[in-house]
Image 1: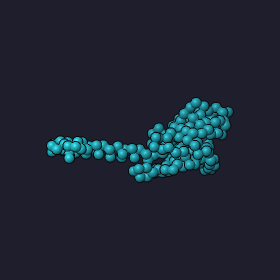
Image 2: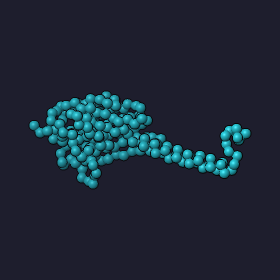
Image 3: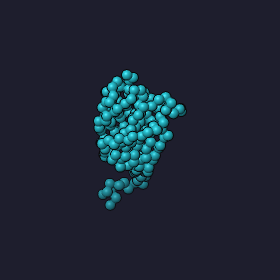
Length: 185
């Protein structure tokens, strides 16, 4: 009967088959853990303005995946170090969310807030490749379309401006920050 199923009768060959099966199991579990760990962060967000692209800073999130849920909430708004530079306002930009293969859904809600910042608003610390800004005293959330990609109108003031995006997905929510510099008149 064992020969008909293709299984070896020799005990040494059985041990080899068991070792290969155990190795495959370990590799499979490790791959599942890696994949499930990779799925506990929200998609990245990108703002495109005047042909310039900027990946948003992830200021905070709560997210659930196969290996459970995770969250991170910083005290301020995280942006890239260097701002996008623009000469006119208002202007139209494009907001994009990079979706991994496993996340085939659009956002449920998307909100935007933007406003000027000064050097006094920047939080001091040993950050690498990012700047962190105090949350603005006034917040005027503007509801956007719940879409993976959309046009957004940016009414900026001269100087540095922080654009904050809040997104609610089926698996959690995320807050992103962008830095845009409007030329002085």
